[in-house]
Image 1 (cartoon, rainbow, N blue to C red):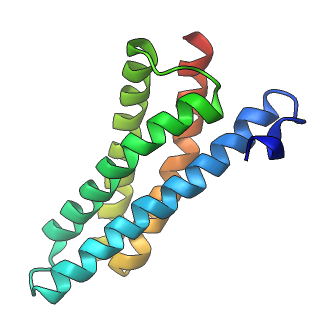
Image 2: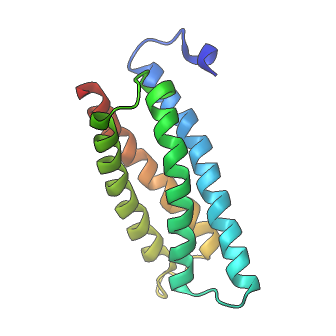
Length: 140
């Protein structure tokens, strides 16, 4: 994957790499979220609370892989306490945006299907997250 972006100049290189890592991370997070939705539905316990639980599980598991990929591939840095703290801060903000958008979308008045609301929330928050992380990694 690095060969695809090595010829690009900064800041385009990190932006394209961020989109690649983010796209893969979005797929992983959504797949985990969707799998838990299906599991909860099969068990007969799917509710707004369980939609949130599925989303949190997907987010948490994806975050670990995303941190490693963001360090090494997107910004070419080794993991450190400084960038881990910045990454976690950015991800908390990202998580809050995702959860807010998710709950707004599944709210009865809007009523978006749980399966679509998850991906929409992830994509919107991903755009916000890039700018937060770019600032963090330029500083560390």
